[in-house]
Image (cartoon, rainbow, N blue to C red; front, side, top):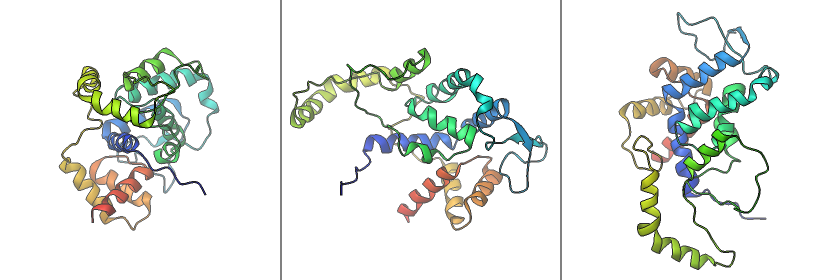
Length: 243
């Protein structure tokens, strides 16, 4: 039986950052705004989870009606996701697909992200031609997420590669990283916990034995945040490690 590959720090950091921004109000507002514009409407049913506060519309997008209505607008939607989420938050392009399925199928992010090639670092074959013809926005965002490359000879051993990175990081690699970093993006950096986030996470932990939809409703009522089930599960998992 093959040994299961352990998640790298590169992947862990990228996912931690993504789940943090996906819990933000502005992120969820953008998700619901796109749903409202692109998806068919239906009357809210008993037990539905959505913007059901007093004064809100009595109709909201159903994520259960398929994607036939999206086919003619695929290019437009992909570009909008790239601009509103991938570019804004300096994400790997692979996150765009997870966001698409979250918006239009209401799928938890983790359902899609488990299989994706995510991380702060990745390997690419420079001579291999792309399988798909990507648009300008996709290419620009990929270069923004990964502006640096370490070119490796096919004859370099692991020892040689490790030695090169160790000796060149401070003098060659890090200065180039600084060149492309934005002070607005906290990806990969240690941050003090926001008191509001800590309070929200403690609420979720206190309700951990309830059905996830009940937890999501409680969070929505107390904080105004729309969290998907995957994010709630991730918070509970992290809290469990701390107790």
